[in-house]
Length: 501
Image (cartoon, rainbow, N blue to C red):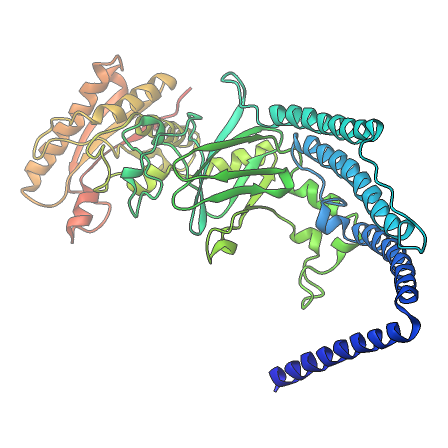
């Protein structure tokens, strides 16, 4: 029914236009061709002037009304150090081209009126005018020179790369249909290498885990943070099609091209909280964020910096939005400490791990840090149960008291602790499961405790500070009713017997 009505309307409009044309022809025949031409020229001239006035007034009113939403003015000021440069360049370009826009439109419609057909008027043909040629050649050349020079200066400033000795944070952003994968460097401050040939379901970035720089890299979940006032260098890549790394509030926009790494450097200067407080000053941002929940969050409270894709990369393009929070350095450090190494938490020990069966330097450092913290807590604690600590990375050859090679890393941590607390006296205890003869188990556990003590004394720890004890299967942690529980009961631990000075 709707289609039929639309068709009838089209037919009716066509008939009306045809009738208007016939009426015009009849009028011309009655009044005469020259009189009709004179009337049409006059009306066309005045209508051109009227359209010019309405058009320009409408342009300025609409520009003022929608300057915040369409042109980036109002509350959304640049939140990066380089943002003001780009905004200034945009303003100058807008002013210069706006002047040309207004002048050319006034000239266009005014000339349509001034030079309308009039009886007895003859057209003048000017073949050449040096002054006019000079004006419309020189003025655009000067204006273009200003824009190009300022643009070049802005480009050199904004696109300058970091210096090796600068203090900056480098992250990696990889676009794929339809998500951004962000990778942060680990405590070493360096991002590991990658190879697309290594890409798997568990290793979507194709990270090369033979590279020690990649062992501590972090791939966080949905929450992404940046520290305010810290220069950030973003490596930008794409896995499949063309994407675009777009942070509108920071004036950051760079294509992510498959096979062609790009980058962008910027410095956030406003935390998310500071930006929200600026938005709070505007009436529009004090309205409910969700009109259906008038008592819910206001627009300024719900504001977040966002990472978007500015290319139409497929049907799921809209879902590439990610939230970036800009926080203080202290808040960023607290968040960063909670992040886990992607390699150690997702790949380590699995079939894809090229370092399976090896103890890595990063693990040695991490274990040393954890051991130091546990030791400190045990020394300071007044609870007797806290005084016993497991040597969880100390192991022995099967059925013997010979320490495995990798046990030295944990025992070196204990040596460091004994030197840190020189008055410390400890009992080193060996434990077994209930498989086999109890007497043999107790003897084996005593021999293993003695092996640990020998390792410590060989490295300068006084034997008077060490008490080796073998308990066999007499002190299980859990019932010996499964292979898993028996493995827990086969352990070496130490107990602090006297406080450290």
